[in-house]
Amino acid sequence: MDWQALALTLRLATVTTVILLTVAVPLAALLVLSRGRWLAVVEALAALPLVMPPTVLGFFLLVLLGPRTAIGRGVTSLLGHPLAFSFSGLVVGSVIYSLPFAVQPLVAGFASIEPALVDAARLLGAGRARVVFSILIPLARRSLLAAAVLSFLHTVGEFGVVLMLGGDIPGATRTLSIVLYNQVENFDYGAANRTAATLLALSVFALAAIYAGGRRGGGRNA
Amino acid sequence: MLDMALTSRRGSFHLQVKCRFISAWTVVFGPSGAGKSTMLRILAGLDRPDNGHIRLDSHVLTDTDRGIYINAGRRTTSLVAQQPALFPHLSVEANVAYGVGKLDQRQRDLRIEEMLDLVDATGLIKRRPRDLSGGEAQRVALARALAPLPRLLLLDEPFSALDGIASDDLLARLQPWLTDHNVQAVMATHDATDAFATAAEIALLRDGRLLALGSASEVLRDERERLRKRLLGPTG
Image (cartoon, rainbow over all chains, first blue to last red):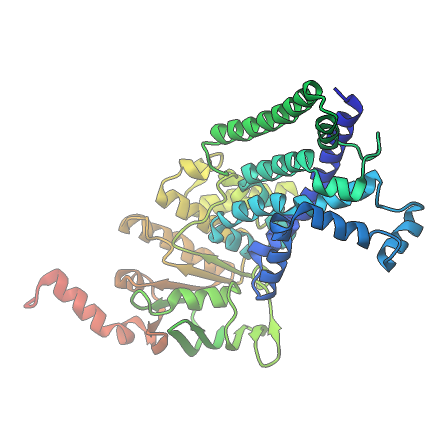
């Protein structure tokens, strides 16, 4: 087992999940609470990584964050190193790649809350932030958990974006998926089996946690 | 005084009213689909009218010509709907306290106690909404709406889950409190007995239009006759 790759994978998934929830909660609340045709564009952009081939996304990010673009040069001068082929670059790629897996359960959870409850909170003087923190999040706890677990697992298992944007640098960008790919390429099926089993066990454990949480909550959000 | 001129189109339904409610208690009476709830939601600031204005005393709450729109929750207006919409994850106490966050703890506790006492629901303070009957939930919803001390109270068939005696008792408790606290009330109902139960100004709404505004004896003459015949029979 490549413990360094396992630790890096878990660190990447944790950082990505925290950033994603910070971004996805207000974004999902905006999509549910607001009205306007432009919201369809925002929703489509947030869902785009679902249908985009990961290698294509990785390639675009590699170009965007590289020295060929003003954004890439700006980020490089700001951080002192290019984002591509670094852990920070992987975080950026993972956040974009897993965005729909955080946003969509939250949108579904928030949308299932009775609009009359949001109306009641607004009438009692709650602004958007208070509506989100005092009504939407407590009543959509299971969706929040689902968003966190799906984001985490999707990041743990990502390959195309990681390979394109991060390459294979031990301790910096070599995740378990890359290790598995290398092991198969080297016909080391015993090690590949162990790596694959670790990834599978992570997924089963996390999904079981979601379903167990759902059963305790009576299968509902609230 | 509540002064309004509103037009609002929702699909095939068209609300168009222009009136001034000067009484402390006005009943908007009309059948289902007349536009009562639409009107109250616009007055509460939950929906925007296509055109028009709403003035409460000297305050302009909405004026589409001047681009003025005071958001719900900032227009000292409370709405109690038929569905109590209590926050299910909060206790009765926390529900009532939700709109009075600016008070210190002691004042907040006193306000909650006063409101629950007013609606005869003091014993429910620690309960969760799922443990309340429909009538109890409506009482708590009323207490929650009154707790921020609104200037305008909008009631959309708020006592539908209470029996006649309980409803009359609650109205008898509520009306003097509203007078003491200078709160103007507008209650929407399709039930003529609710309309007659209060010495109110009656606004008769049908198909989105205001047909009459005046005392119950004038505006609801036909309705009173219908009720009388129903109770006593055609020869009564």
